[in-house]
Length: 287
Image (cartoon, rainbow, N blue to C red):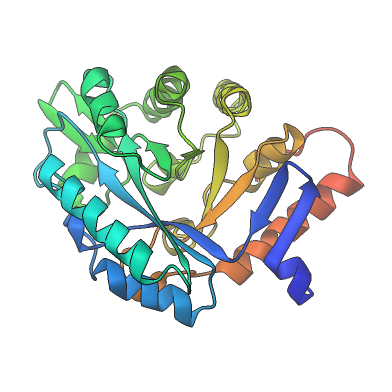
């Protein structure tokens, strides 16, 4: 792949993958990542990026065994530090400050308040915490912690995956995010079910809602660490491209050394998807 192709791959004026921006990074603020914001900025500079995008966790009303998101006071500190770095590095790199807004279906208005708390540069939408009535607590859909995972695996996987996509479909128009984070992260801990017609239909509904809202699809390279492939699956990317949904690239880094991780690998796979799409008629089939 040429340098020009690696830096920007376009299938249409509306669909561009930019390999010089990492738009989803976490720091020590979220209580499960390491490193100061400035260390991530310096790492991005070392990797030759033009933009480093922070997207810290914002949740409300979650009953979990420990906090892995920012309190409201910490969100304020994070915003202030991000703006300090934006000014300090303005001649060297773009520093953007946003939130990964977690859906809690029972706390929509409180989540809206977090969305409005600052003029965030970017809003990512995700759904991590499922309320499990049997255990009387939230379960983290993407956590491999043994206790959490054991309870998740007691549930009907198809019902949980169906619920996951239905929640995202229902809440996307309420929050109008800039991107959906790790769209099919449910395959980290649950069986891959996106070959089933009902699940495929829900994913396509979600993509259609994203197109209508102007929401981008995140190519999240942290998936390589946990599933051997970026999030989401290749057929979902192909369908997103067919619908004209823009792609954005992120490492979902939790340590400065992870900034920009696996970007070249993801670029190679995206090119294969584009070539496959161009050489075959109709929709791609699930991986």
